[in-house]
Image 1 (tube, rainbow, N blue to C red):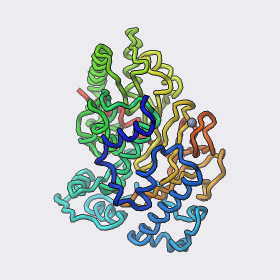
Image 2: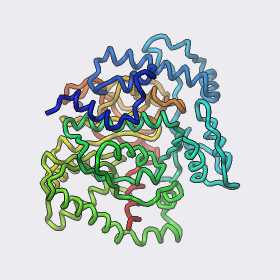
Image 3: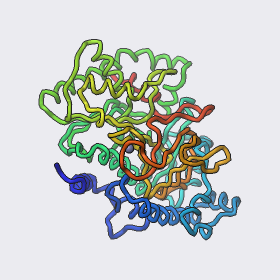
Image 4: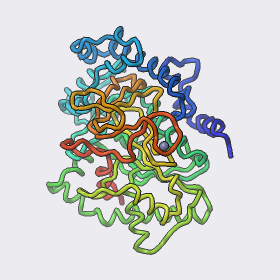
Amino acid sequence: MASFEDYIKKFEKQISKYIVPQSEWGPVEKAVYGVRDFYRVDPKEANELRFKSIKFQFKRQYEMNTFYRNLCKNRNISPDDIKSHDDLLKIPLLEDKFFKNYPDGKEFAVWLANIFTGELPEIEIRKKKPSYDDILKDFNSAGLVISHSSGTSGKHTFIPRDQRTFNMAEYIFAKAVVTMIYPFWDYDMSVYLLMPNPFKTFLFAGKVCSVLYDAVRDARCAIDRKVTTELISLLMRSKGIKAKILRFSSALSNRKTIKRIVSWLEENEKKGRKIGFIGAPYILYEVMEYLKKRGKTFDFKDRGAVVTGGGWKIQEDKRLPVDMFREDVEKIFGINDELCLDLYGMVEGNGAAIHCPEGHYLHLPTTFYYPLVVDKNMEPVDYGEYGRFAFLDATTYSYPGFIVTGDRVRMLEHCPVCDRFGPVLEPEVKRVRGEEVRGCAEEVRRMLSLES
Ligand SMILES: [Zn+2]
């Protein structure tokens, strides 16, 4: 078995286009690319990397982003106030709702330009009355990666990333997965992406998976049609003729996608190949229901891995219990429990938490990321107490990544099961009461029904 060091080196060589050359590293790059295993950095060293990288980014945001500087001035905080690690808690946080509160038409382009930090490239808005999708297209053809997510209400969250910031997101998400499944990753494996095609969408959860096509030789995806904000809004609407027509074909096309995945499994079992699934648990749940009915099972023991993300809603009002899902994955595909992991990430930040194989607690990165739990007054609470998840992210060059989410979590100082350093979240993250249900599980569920 390759040492972890050799394994990660080999992986990084494969995805080198997402990595900044060492000669150009500043405090942020050092905290991201200079760390071999995000979850095993000695806390003292992690705090130092974190302090330097977040202070650097806070100063940069303060100097280069007018709206954020005004917010800081209102709260009487400036970069000079950040002298020690504890002072990082003084950095003003933005509510995630902020990124949902925007005008439409050409004004939307102005809104995006205002929250963007740094110099924007020249952007031409081509249409007279542009839709959100038109504006995304115009911004992104100028070299940016504006991506979105959406709640069940259909109101999207838009986050403006430049290429450097998006590359870091891809690197961090991919490395989180490859680290936790050690030594399973292999360039010569086949992976089914249970998400929209990254090259045909700006949905963050899909887009961030484009790194997969560099990380493995054989990747394919379950939802190949173009997925726009308009399509998602339409899918999330329950009334109207267009929405009804979209739903009408659902059962039939759904079945086709499932059958394609099953023949892919058969083919790879026959060839003895290593496989992986990445994406929405709902699609795999459907595949497993299909196989259960036919009494069919596979044997991918030590040859298969599953990494899920996007939430556990399987029907409008039904959640899939995570441990039951893992049991089924083992029974039906033969895939070991320790290779069935869930990832918690979001469009607003570049940090991702991922299950450890031993205990399935969500481990957080600590060198470029400061995970926090805050109460209703935005004050940090102690380990073990419930509150809203918040973070300071040093890697978001193109917007202030100091954000309070609507997710209700409990953070523990150490994993109760494994010996990795750093804090963890409990295995499953739920939404704060009263906030709308988020995560892309519901969107993906409805998108799947469009495949033919
Ligand atoms: Zn653990």
